[in-house]
Amino acid sequence: MRDVIVLGAGVVGMTSAYALARKGFAVTVIDAASAPAEGGASFGNGAQLSYSYTDAMASPSMVVNLPKYLLGCDPALRIALTPSPRFMSWGLRFLANATRSSFERNTIEVLKLAMESRTGFAELSERIEFDYRSTGKLNVYSSHESLRNAEALSVLKNHYGAGQVILTRDQAIARDPALAHYGHPFVGALWSPFDAAGDSSLFCRNLRSLLENDYGVRFMLQTKVERLGTRAGIIAAVGTAVGELSCTRAVIALGAWTAPIARTVGISLPIWPVQGYSLTIPATALAPVASITDTARKMVFCRIGDRLRIAGLADIGPSSGEFKQERFRTLLDTAKGIFPKAGDYDGEVNAWTGLRPMTPNSQPIVGSSKVGGLFLNCGHGSLGWTLSMATASRLAEVVSASA
Image 1 (tube, rainbow, N blue to C red):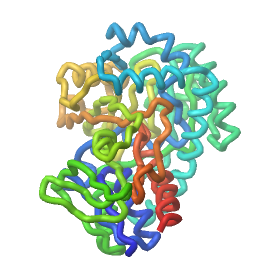
Image 2 (cartoon, rainbow, N blue to C red):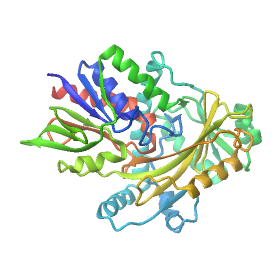
Image 3 (spheres, helix red, strand yellow):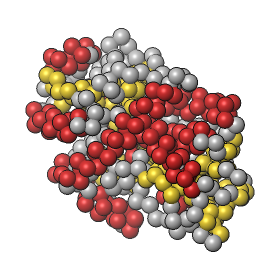
């Protein structure tokens, strides 16, 4: 039997199901939500498909600014220490990856995945609708030093096909006139011509239809995964809130919930949830055409259809994923200061928060596990949307080789 259960119906789980179904597997997808991409990090993510902007979170600059983050002096990124041994272990490994050489290595490894994913998204956009737009991205810099650092890294990335170009302030405004209404001074920008955008929630909903109609994929929604079971070191069952399911192959793609489920069969994964926020408002005529990232304030602006998605903030520490009104207010006020005329902030504002499953090196974990028949596709951090097509393809190759 070529049956496989995919745990998780976010973008990583859905693309995993797609890649496995195309390999001829009979796929069942299980998720606690009532529809794909309703929870986790998929529903309201930044919408950017950042094929070229794959910078690892652990970096030398992160270490330099660590006291500021710990003291809560940076509104965009906050770190709250917790006595959890798992957090301490993750944090030490994170710091070990913050050297210049490790930062560059991790950034390039993720870039390779992203470039693979780009091809997959372009192909799938011919089969389903998800407001896919290949309009490039501008990373805006407020200081000459930060722009020089970005240029140095872009030289390295361009060896791997990123195609990034440094622009002056005037050149950036010519590229996207919306920057003429930017609320803060900036000195230049990094143009990533291959980057794109899309609605990940719409993507997952329409991919579900494709999977059911063309590949016979079965969905078990509103079914919470609680544990896994093994027999003689091989996956044997998936325990859910409504009963136990026998299985011989399973993929864990549960985002921030992957690590606790993996621990039920003795697998320890270096994944820690990083909480972020987003808001979606009606776009105006002055909304940017390209995706925009304000690097100083760590905030992204992305048009999806007739809406403007704004996302940012990173809270590292103990987190249940609870929506914090004061953090959302920080996002909203910062967005108004950056692009005051790009969207209707007084109209309907859709607020969201989610947990990004971050590894110490920002690289996702993809492949087999120490439990026979149990596979992993997890730890994508803030780039799950961007990397999902590539990691799904790599996962499917591993599962097929073991069948």
